[in-house]
Every structure is written in structure tokens, then in C-alpha cells.
Length: 550
View 1 (cartoon, rainbow, N blue to C red):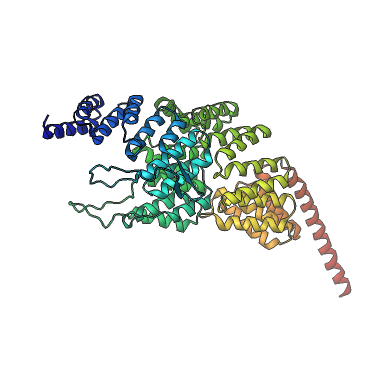
View 2 (cartoon, rainbow, N blue to C red):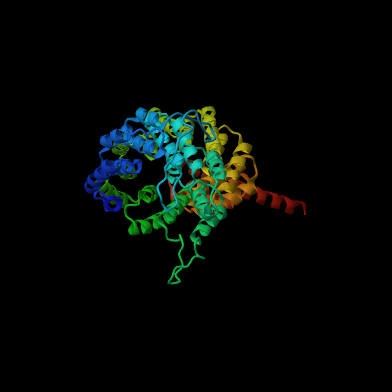
């Protein structure tokens, strides 16, 4: 067969693979490889076999070739075959010996003479070393060696920042603390044309920064490419990109802007109903808002479309949790973990379902599992601390809350709980410090979510006899929510302590209007009325005595 005829057949093979006609591609690739015995043609045949799901045959073909130990492409594809066959130890052996340090720097112990016979291609490619590091990470994660997996994922991103999959594994599986994420991003070497990617990655990890910082990043990305115009002069931007909008929705959720988050995810899911990351944020926002009907519909659709995904059964658990059927919710959260053991929301859901029924030991067990599996996630440690507070073990609570703060120093919720812990052990100055720090670190403007923090700060100030400051925070809390008995009662009691009986009585009445059976307000109202009567009599007596001496 002439060389030009062979080249035409190669074109047919490439076209078959691009059109997903894998049996045809395998048929012709087998003939071309037999004719030429060229390594590039053998690789093309193995690629066709791999795409056609003939993993064992593809691996045998690659392993039989003498070049497999010298060409990184051959070795990588052979390891990918072993990955699909779930033979993880063999996969690592095929990838060769290499070591990685804590910072993601690689040192090869062998195979320094490896070659990479690159195909002729005009497209920009991801570094093959990055792809190999990522595959090593997947193998170690499958073998439940998450420490090594974390290091190899870091190495993959450092080898080539375009290897998004590695960064996605690090972020979604909470393998890094907030500080480690920032350090990793700052160490990446982006090409000048990839500056937009640096901004995008920073939006993925910096969810607890101040509002103006994060919003500036989003605005920068939305305007990205506005200076690039196509032939019809229309402007291209990332403004309507689904991944960017999902990232913004997650930011709103973490700020406590649940309604804003829900509206954004609803719009996004109308455009792309199968965007699973957005779906997870949508479920979380619907849970917070108590939209049980929406959760029911989402759960039905997900279990129909993705019956083998953890997210689908997590959605069912969310629905039952929302309607306060905690036993059923726990059952479905557990089912989600059986499909994917590394799905963080399901483990936290199990703990929360137990905690809602005040089953502290089981809740702690679920949180501890989550803390072990996801060392970069501070929520399990935070919830363990909150459970210890519920059982009045404040020293233990403080230890776990401090640990949560180490993992994620900028989450205001952690600082709030540290303030609550200090308040319970009567360290009111420390409590005021943490509550004020919480309010200073809230990423967005104050919302109803943070009303309890403002009230707690007012309570602590009242304990320190800083009454005027306490009153100002109680009034601030009332601008966020006018349905809080605690706020009215605290404000009334503060006025009462200042001997301002008239205002105290007014606010005791307001508190009792919201909850007529509140025992504290009922008793204190009686005392305030008696004190006001007594003070009135005393003032009359004093005035009459004054008249006698005149």
C-alpha cells in the first residue's frame, strides 16, 4: 500500500474517532498499524481501543510494544486503561517511581530518559507531566491514601495551571485549608494570556473575603474579553458563563443571602438544568428558605436522570430534612454516601439530622468521619464544637472551635460560635471581642441571618454594664428582624436596669405580644410596673416634703 493511501486511512481513523464511530476506527487502525508498525500508528490503535472501551486489549497492545517504558504517551494511556479496570496498584506501577514534597514539587527517582513523541498539533496542550500527576492522585485517592492524593493533585496544578480537574478535586473534596488554597494559587505560573484564569481560580476559593474584594473579582471576569471583538463586532464576555454564575451563587449562599442565591440558581437552572454544581447550591438555598416543594421536584428529577449519583439521593434527604422527617432524611443521606463516600454534604447532612433529634453521639460520629475525610472543611469541626456546647462541655467546644478557625480563619460563623462559647463561661469581654469581629468579617451587608449575633453582642455588653452601647445594638437588631422575643426582652431589661421603667414596660409588652407565655417577660413586667409605681409614690412624697419646708 502506498504511503499516501496509508495517510488517507489515518485521516479516516481520526474522523471515525471524532464522529464516535469507534468500531470503524478500531478496524482501520488495526490495519494501518499492521502495515506500518509505526509507534504513532500503534498509539492510534490503542487510543481507538480505549475510546471503544476495550481497555484490556488496549493495555495489552501498549504493554506489548517495546516503546511503552520510554514514551510518556504510551505509559500514560496504559495507566488510563488500568484506571478504567480499577487496578490501582498496577496503575501506579505503570506510571513509574516519583516522589512529591509538601509543596507539590516532583523528584523522579527513575526514568529520567523518558521521551514524549508529541503529535503534530496546532492546539495548545496540557503538560503530559500534569496529566500523569493527576492520574497518580486519582489512584491514591481510590486507594484511600488521601494525603498522597492531595500532594499529587497539587503537583498536577503546579505542573500546568490548565489542569482544572486537579484543582477541582482539591476544592470539591476539601483537601486544603483556606490558607493552603491561597498559597497554592499564588504559586501557580500563569501565561500572560491566562490572567483571566487566575482571577477565576481565586473566585473559586476566596468565598469569605470582604464583599467589595469578591465582587471586584466577579466584575473583572464579567468584563473579561470585552476588548475582543468578532467579525460582526459583537462583544464577547464571561458575564453569562454558567460556571461563573454558579460560583457567584455559592458566594451568596456563604454570605447568608439565600434568597438572592436561590433566584440566581433558579435562573441558571432554567438555562442549564443539568449543571450539577449549581444544582447543589440550589438545593442548599432551598433548604435554608424552607422551599419543600422545590426540593421535592428537584429530588424527583435528579433520581430519574441520575439514579447512580450521590447528589440525587442527597436531594431526597434534603426534602425530608426540610419537612422535619429526620429519620428518612438520614436514611437518604446515608444512601448518598454509599454511592460516593467522598461527597461532603451527605456526611454533614447525616450529622445534622442526628443533631436535630438531639442524638449527640451519632451526630459526633458523622462529623468526625467528615472531618477525617475532608481535612480542609471546617464545618464538621465547627459542628462538633457546637454539639459540645449543647451538652455544656465548653472547654472541649472551645478546642474544636479554635481548630475550625485554624482551618478557615475568615468564616464569621466560627467567630460567632467562639463568642457564644465565651459568653456561656461568663468571659464577656472575650465574647464582645468575638462578636464584634464576626460583624466586621461578614462578607456582605448585614442580613437577618446575623441578627442573633447582634443580639448576642448586646447581651454581652449589657452584662458588662455598658448599657447605652447595648441599647444601640438591640435597636440595630430590630432593624434586621422585628419578630424576635429575645431582642425585645433584652432591650426592655436593659432599660429596666437603667431605671427607665416606662420604656422597659413598653418593650416587655412588645415581647409578650409576640409570645404571651414568656415567663421571664411576664415576671419582669410585673416588677417593672411595681417599680414604676414605687418610684411615682417616692417622687410625690419628695415633692410634698419639699412643699412643707417652703
